[in-house]
Length: 106
Image: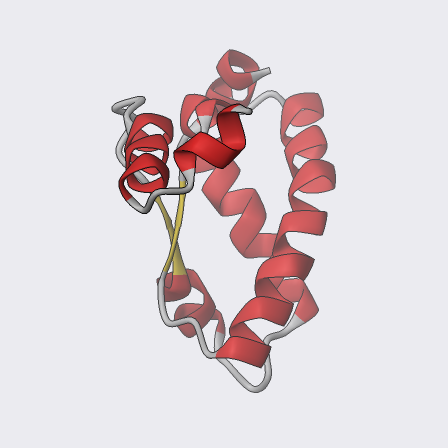
């Protein structure tokens, strides 16, 4: 799917539009209710697809609207992270450092 989306395959892009709608809905609610100013998407699928994923997410979010924000403002709210595959490890390290690691392991 990622390779096909990167090539501009219409079916793959339609799948991206479908699967990014729930994410756009959730992000829209979070930004509107808690005032988040920047969202960085990480994870194997999103980063594997890359810019086509982000464009689909932006399209859906813009279609939904976001409390008076312009399309440019919505695009500026969310970006892709760096595909370094360390985000899960960093999160696990923070969990252990906070002393929560033991309760999760038992």
